[in-house]
Image (cartoon, rainbow, N blue to C red; front, side, top):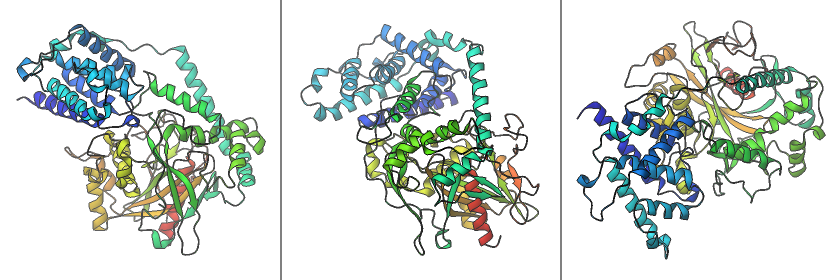
Length: 590
């Protein structure tokens, strides 16, 4: 067996496992190929079969055309399915039939589970009347039949060149030339960024926030104010990463693509939610980066008291409801202040925020009537050869949904479960800051794409702490060459979303260089698509923004070159995470 054959066999096994996992899912387990994170894997599968490297999962339209063509070929080259079949009866067209079945299930019949069951039954030659009387009782038998069918197809001998010949021409399609419309969009985005920077540097924003939330002190980092407040962790819980976790979610996980009618949200927010759903379903959307994943969201935040650390009670949420009911408070504020960034605005000029203030006594700590997804961020401090510390600071790319090209700490992300949605009540391991930290560590810093999406396999999500780079870091932690500390919680007053903050202190000055040059089979440190992986001057918001990663700090833990974090190019959460980290390091005598 050649290496190519072994690779194809491994991909077949993976495809079978995907299908098994899918058909163990409930209706809320989502029937959309893109949402399930299958597009990239299927794309890889087809690339190997065709023997081409030109199929790219980010080329959504090309991939869609390719799969539709494969489906069409399967329809026009049907194969009889005998009652008692053997492998020798399987023809070489079965591989495209398998893909055809997948496309018709995912793309044409996404609405109801019952409809998908019947259509799949017709496609595989399994009579739908067998499921009409008692569909629930017959469903396990149906699943078994379908899995056997797909398994037979994917393990059959075939000639990939002949089978996929009808679609090879699609791979040679040229990309369209940049259109004037796209250039106009880029100009509009640049102007939007400039307006945002002006508001963040103006006095009006901070005067507005102080007037609205007088009980919460705005953060000061290196003599600069940021639109965020922080609550430092008590020293007794520094070593407990899970300290901020209060009551876990008790509500049912919302449907990914349906507006939650049982929740009382700001009525206009539904329009934004529906726009995100339409964008997600559009064939040009890269749904490996834009998908309605589940979240752990704010229910109640209990402020710290003497001897009682801060606690967050949670509820389940979704990315798209997060955007529509919490994230959109930010652009509303930016728009209201854009005309005169130095003049504060009243609550009357902020209709969404005003509605929330009317429904909730204190929207900073009460997550009622919105989906305030909780996030987490880690400040990395690396000891340098001079005996001081360097701050690891990255810059976000143009591809991220918010704060494009702004500087941020890494890793950071949404505090979220990554498991089969139908079994979420039995997946308690996911409700863990430790687990979420290592997921983002592998995904963002080592480009481990499998850690980016919720998992839908029967056995549940893989443990990110077992990834090779995570094992290396755990060894450093065990040896005393690294320390992972809980530093506190911040609340971004623009979005009203809490963030759990950590400090990763590396005492080995050679750590970054060693991780960047790690040899295979280990993964080397390589930032994923959310961050610029190389220090570069392109797309800097201002000339004052740092283009490099390591910011040398002096003995007082301030930038040695005298520069500061300006709000116009710094994610507010980054400033908060760095401030909390520095406070802990100073308290530890560093």
